[in-house]
Length: 136
Picture 1 (tube, rainbow, N blue to C red):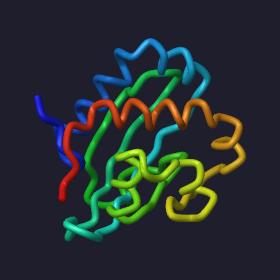
Picture 2 (picture 1 turned 60 degrees about the vertical axis):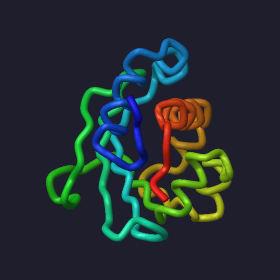
Picture 3 (picture 1 turned 45 degrees about the vertical axis):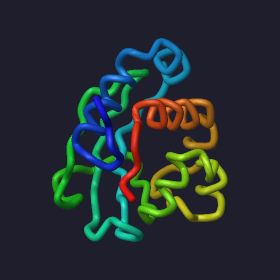
């Protein structure tokens, strides 16, 4: 099945991947924190997207596409333009470099994120592996 980023199928595919990937389960076994990924319009994306993921001890307990942040209080809110997120998804922009240069803005504990770099990087690996196509 094609999973085009961004789409509901992609988000569901990512959840399944996170819940079935033994490497991610091991690396993220101590991770405690939900997040919302806010994708700002740029390039072919004309409307803001908000993807919610409840990540807990190497599992994805829930995913949802939100209309706004009023219904959740995630531990992390990650915000980037579609162009920067797609560069991360294609491997052209390292996620940690994106955070440090504010191409990917992090609202939440940056210290927690930095203590858990392997989890962050493996999460991105899983996201890349479920992506068969990028909206262009």
